[in-house]
Length: 98
Image (cartoon, rainbow, N blue to C red; front, side):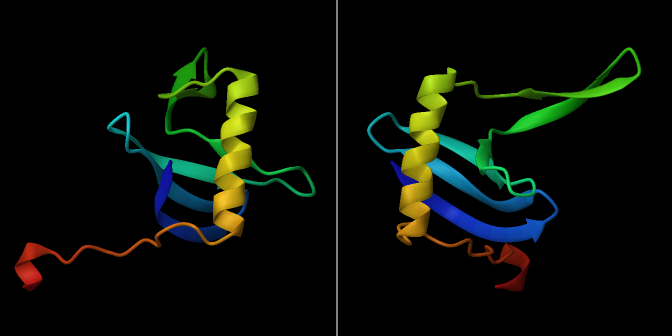
C-alpha cells in the first residue's frame, strides 16, 4: 500500500487529501480525505458525491469498506503519514507551458 499526492489543506474539518495505491491489485483510490472535527478522532472520508433527497443534502461514497476493515485501513494510513511514508502532491505542468 502506498500513499501518493498527499496534500495538506487544513480548511475546516478537511485536513488533507491523498491517493491510495494498492500495487499488487493494480488499484488506486483517488481523492481520499482526512477529516477531523474538534477534538474527535480523525477519520478517512472516501471519494463521494453529494445528492439531494426530499430537499435534504446527502452524500454517497464511491468506495465502501466494512467498519472493522476501514478501521484497519485508517490505522495503516495514519501510521504511514505520521512516519512521512508518502509522496507529496506535485502539480503537473500543463503541456501548454512546456
